Structure formats: C-alpha cells, structure tokens
View (cartoon, each protein chain N blue to C red):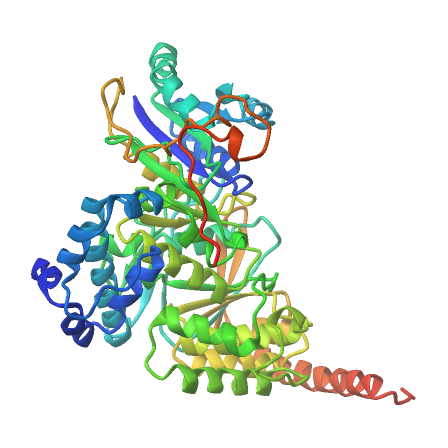
Length: 228
Length: 331
C-alpha cells in the first residue's frame, strides 16, 4: 500500500484537492482510502462519502491533535491494509503551524492557499518546510503576480519540494497530483519509523487542565516573553 | 552547487551570490557575521534557538544548498535562450474520439480558443502546463522545439510555461501599486528593480482608460486598471513564454493594444474569448467541443475584412461610452 500524509492550515483546501486527485486515481482503477484527523468536528466525512471514498474520521477532542495523530497512525495503516487499499491518504489539519505529521519514508504533502498571503510560507514550520510535495490552491482568485510571488516564497523555504498548483473547484491539476501520489513508497507499517520533526514540547499545568491565569498556576514547561 | 560554498566566509559568498543572505531572515535567523562561513554558523547555532524556530541543524545545510541552487537556476532562467516553438499533438475527446491535429505555435503568435464552458479549454491549458506526454486524460503530447521536453521541466515552478491572466483579477495584498510590482520584481530577481517597476506602471497607464498613480493601493484599482497592470506586469516580468488571457472583454482597457504588448514581448498569446474582435485578431482559432479540439480555423481574408468593420463599430460604441462618462447627451 502507498501511504501519504497530507497536511495544511485549516480551510486551505486539503479535502477538495484530495477528492480531485482520488477521482482521477479511481478512473485508473486505483482503490483509495482516507483517514481524516481533526480536532473538534469535521464535515469532510460526508464530502468523501458523497464521492464514494472509504473514510474513517478521528477527532482528538481535548487532546493535542498532533499527539493524537501519532498515537493512531499505526492503526490507520492497519485499517488500510485490512481494507485492501492501493493507496491511503492520512489527512490532518495543521493546527499550530509548528507541527507536522510527516514521517520519514512516507510521502509528505502540504496544502497551502494563495489567499493566506505571501508571508505565510515563512510562518509555517516543518509541515511545509519538510514536505515532498507542496500543493498551492485558490490560484484562480488572485493575480498572476501574486501566484508567482507566492510560489517563489514557498520555494525559498523549501527548495527541494515539487510545487504543484491545483484548483480544488475545477479540478485543474488534480490528475497531476494523483500521478505524484502514485509515486509514494510502498509501506505496510510505520512502527519504528521516525517523525520527520519532533512535535512541540508541552506538558505545563495548562496541558493538564488548569484554567486559572497567573504565575502561581504555571508549572512545568513554561516560557516567558521579553518586553522592552 | 559546490558543497565548498558552505565553507566560504559569508562576505565572500555574498560577492558571488548577492541574494544568498536572504536565506537567514526567511527562516527567522539573524544574519551571520561576514567573516563566518555558513557551515560554522549552522554548527554554532544554539539548540534552543533551533527548537524555537522549528529547525534542524542537519537539514539547514541541505536547505541552504537547495537555496543557492535555486538562486543559480533563477539567474540562468533569465539568460537562457527562448524556445522557438511549441507543438501540441492531438489525443482524444471525452468520448474517446481521436483528435487529428498537430499544432505548432511560435513566439509572437496569437491563438484564440473558442467553445462553450466545459468544452475543454481549461484541460487544454493544463496539458500545456503539465507538458503532457500522452499521460493526461486527453492523451495529448507536447513537444518543445520539436522534441519531447526535459522531464525535470515539469516540476520547475520557476520555469512554468503558462502565465494565466484569469477572469477574476483580484488582489488580496494590501499594498500600493509600486510596492506590489517591486515585490514581484524582487521574486523574479531582476537587476534594475526601480526601473522595471516604473516602466510597468507607465505601460499599464497607457493601457488603462483611467490613470492611476504608483501610490494607489492595488485593492482600490478598477477592473480595467487591474487588468492593465497585470498585462503590463506579465509582459515585463513573467518568465513564462505562453500567456493565457481569459475573457478580456468589457474590461475598460485598450484590448487590442494590450494583446499587442504581449506579442511584442515575444509571448505566445492564447486567448479564450467570444469577442469577435479578439477572436479574429488570432492567426488561428481552436474550436473546442466535448473536451476535444473539433477544428482549427485559420483566419481568412474575408474575416480580416470583417474585423475592420467590427473595429469601426467598436470605436463608435467606445466614443458613446466616453461621452456618457463625460455627462454628454447621446443624441
């Protein structure tokens, strides 16, 4: 089974481009499954089901979404293998720009949209910088110059990725993305594999449910800003 | 890119590659002192700093090498010889019917694309952008200068074949016209940025009906002004040899001149249009039906004569529009 991790900021078009790529793969007889990770709620299950795509959704609720992802990724692969998919897309929302679900030896895709502004590529961390494929969406809404500046800025922070423009509405570029996804390495288990980048350090009193504000209530891994 | 670049003091490296320094602020790192080599700088970075910026020491070396490579290819892109021709070989339409054509286009040519929405115009452009080799849904293939293109070109975002001036000409950046064009020029790494910026703005003003200044925010430009600015910008700054214009009509700009501007810069102009004046400006027009190219029509002498007639009619209508704008009576 070929496995892909796909991440991107909320509303960047992750599901839309995935659906377009899957539509093209299905025509070629490739069977695809999707595992969708999100935090509180998601409508994407319905979107995928409407397209006849097998999908399982995981909601992290009050747990850190990225830690939740890592704790369930092995089971996601097991489901994919048991279901007999040729290709499994594991989609997760990039919730804090500091995180990335990308795994060594697994094809990593980052979806980012032109509307997020030209400084955004700088602000997104390993999710973008360590991706193998960067999909840029919503190109139909901005000018040619903005598209060129945006792609250049992505290139500046990730010089080795394949950059692809995909229109999630019309599907332009979806066929090409499908083709790139088929180049993912064969993987049946991720046990023992390494995340491409460590998840952010945590475990302070607020991770454990503290709600009161003030120095007396801050314990564990706490960091202070400098004010001049 | 030679790995030994990493061992050179930054000041020496900057002489060879003046934009290399931009790498550091892009990642949120302070600029290394000029006497220090990038390799030594990466090795000396504090673990805490790396952690806070979500960076890894080993991948920094790789990223910096990639970045220098990018700078050198961008430089090459500017001086590389232009392509002589693009040839598109027919595939099949949505029902699998064979398209029987081989279309060769050269810089400076205008090709019109006609056909209803959903007839396959976008797919045709996608085939060109993707350098299709019989492996897209239409089965078409593309040749550059008569030969299959280097497969690496497919992913070279800095050498994209098609610049697309779409129907929706929105700007999401909150910048003045001058700042906006400057930013684009910087990303293209042109040499005389202020000079290029000035000439783009003045060209755009010649094309637009109403004038605007370099200080005008891009978000407050009218539809026609935005169009004019993007046509001037694309003709002067875009690397792409092919420009697609989607529905230029009624934009309040000098359409004919706008198209001429692109042709003068040796671009191949593809125009999706139902406007008879623009459609007949093309040497040839491609007729799209059911996802395929149903016919390629060469503009005839009779059609050119008609074009003249349509232009006179258009000039008359234009004069009336101007009169309306100036508060005159239309009697």
